[in-house]
Structures are given as structure tokens and as C-alpha cells.
Length: 461
Image 1 (cartoon, rainbow, N blue to C red):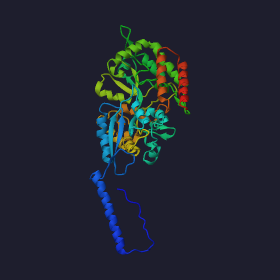
Image 2 (image 1 turned 45 degrees about the vertical axis):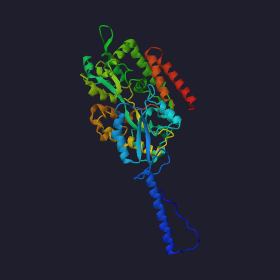
Image 3 (image 1 turned 90 degrees about the horizontal axis):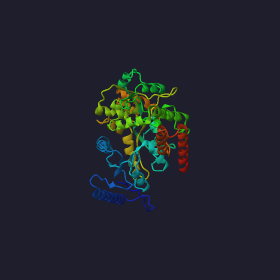
Image 4 (image 1 turned 30 degrees about the vertical axis):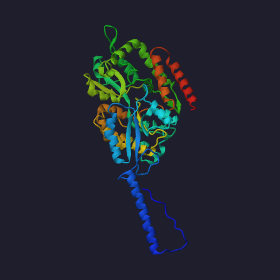
């Protein structure tokens, strides 16, 4: 209930009769009580008011619309373990969960972009961090910097790389939530069969090439029964391999797809396609794909680069061979690396309940909500973006997961740029051309640089 402004009194008399003062005070009390009674009659016994308007009082109940792109059990579990607890803590805020699937083969939603452009966006969205740069450049996301600065959230609470991925031109557009990274899975049984030490996985690219070569086995039909390595299998994208070769995708604010080490990485990938016959390798990959299993768990692959989420497959596949996890090998003279991806929570531009949305975002993406979600029974091998939470959960007690955790403080992330998706698609395009013998690495990556710069110019960047 709002209180009236201070009263002004007419007249110039310095004193009033006591009886007159009592009469005025009594009338004022009656007026105020009548106002309260009237409000209670229209809003219910608790004095709250469900509203869709952006201008709401401190006791009004607000419903925020939360869009997410995940199917399966996510909605049921997230509501049970996180949303319900948030609503208990903030009884004036209700959360409506709305499934909005991503568009095509992307992590992006055309429906979300259309809603923002039409001035009717949801209040919160679960959002791929990789897209923040491009959407912030379109002015499609709310700048959260003022909320962060006054809301008890510090960049130091998060891994540096994942926090940086939520920042565009020195402004914060999301709170990171959930992350992953990449390492090398290796088949100890196949290593033994090839006469290699199963407890000494390769640490350099030269060692990887040598060991992988010893593990290729062809059947009577000339097709591969077992392979040592297909560099582009699973998470072995050009992005991954370029970093493994000491390359860089950005320097001093400029995109550098044709960095000399990136060129070496693409040339190395194409070398495997030539040496081991791209048609034979493709035939092997296709056959593996038809099993519906991750290629590594078939037991026919010596080395593969993949993410921590693959550890969740163990309960389903129960492999009958010995295996291990190690950091990905690096080119001679360069440190072993990993790169991280993951999700975040954003407030789309034009959200009607931005303040309430921030309370929700801060709850789910900071320590309290992250712990609630990470302690659910089906959490598996999730890595959170908060080192303190990972420590509290004792995730490093799992020796395989510890490999991934130990690399998080130095993990790379893809450049935060308006053309991030365009650059990614270009790298995939030239990767395919190179391994199929349709272009040289230097020429292809010079072309990517030219195309990326042209795309930035179109955007006035």
C-alpha cells in the first residue's frame, strides 16, 4: 500500500485548537483505512495483484516468461530442482517455462529473434554463449552491466574464459551457466595390441601420428576394421586442431583465421585424408555412425578428441575395453590446450519485467541455483562455470573428469564477434574442402579471412 505525500496546512494561525486537530486526525485515519479496505477487496486477502505491466509495485505478483531450447526431461527437472525453489524465495515472481526449439541445426532460435524484433520477447532465455557477440551487436540483448555491478555478482566468481564470452565491447550481456571442454580419449586395449605402452598416451602431435599409424588395421575387403585417428572425428574440428597447433583465431581484436599455425593444422588434417584415403575413412565413419554409438565406445578407434559429456555414456554402453582420458596432444613447443563452450542466461531486449528477470537470472546462474541444479540425481559429469561450486561438489574426485576440470582455468573460447557463426561455418566449409582434396590450406584460409572481413564491413564493424 502506497502512503500519501506529506500534507500541507492552510492558514496562517500558529496554533490550532486541540479539538480541531483531533477531528482532522480522526478523519485522516478513516480515509486511509477505507482505501486499504478497497484495495483488499479487489486483490484478495494477501494484497497481491497479478500483472503483465512493467510498472508494478513491490507487492505485486509478476509472471516472467522463460524460454528454453531443450527437450527431454529438462523442463520437469529444472522446475522441480530450481524454479520451485526460486519461487519460494521470491513469492511475488512466478516463472512460466516455454519450450522453443532451436532453428535448423543451430543453437539459435529464429522465433526468439522475431519476438525481440516485434517488441514482445520473453523475459529470460537460455542461450548459447557462443552467440552473445552477434546478438549483442544486433542490439537484441539487454545490457546487464548495471545489474552485475550492483547485484553481488563478480567476474571472479566464474572461470575467466567463460565470463569473457558473455562480454561484448566491455558490457555484460549474460551470466554464464554450464560449460564443457575437450580432451583426448584413448583406447588402451588397441594400444597394447599395437605394441604401445597403454599407460603412456601421446603428448605431442608427432607422438600422436606415430602411435596412430601403428593402430590402423584393414580387413580382407580392404576396409578399415580399426583406425588410430581421424582428426576431424567428433570434436576434432579445425577450431580444435588449430589451437592444438598453437594457432589463434583472434589477435588484438582482429580475426585471424589464416594464422600460420592454423594453416599448419588444416594441412595436417588434409594429410591424414591423403595418407589413409578419405573414401576409406569416410566409409569407416559411416559404418560407425549407423551403430548409433559414439565412435569411441565401439572399441574400434584408438584416439579421439571429445568432451566431458561423453563420460555420461558409460552407464549406457559399458565398454569392454580399457580406456583413458588425457589432455589433447599439442604441436612441438606449444602447451596442451582445451576450449570451452556452454550456455548462459540472457534478458532479451525489450523484456517487460527486466528487474524480476534479473533476480531469476542471478539465482539460477550464480551459486545458489547452480548448486541446486548440479545436485540433482541425473547431473552426471556436468562442469559448472563456478570453480567454487565444482570444488564443493568434489567433482575432481572422478579422475577422468578431473582431466577436464584441471584445464578449465586456461581454456580457450571462440572469439566474441558479430560474425562468430559466420566464421564457424566458414571453417567447417574449408575443412571439408581440404580433406577432400579441393584446395590447399593456405589458399582456403586466406579466403576465409577475406570473407570474414567482408562480412564485418557489411555490419559496419
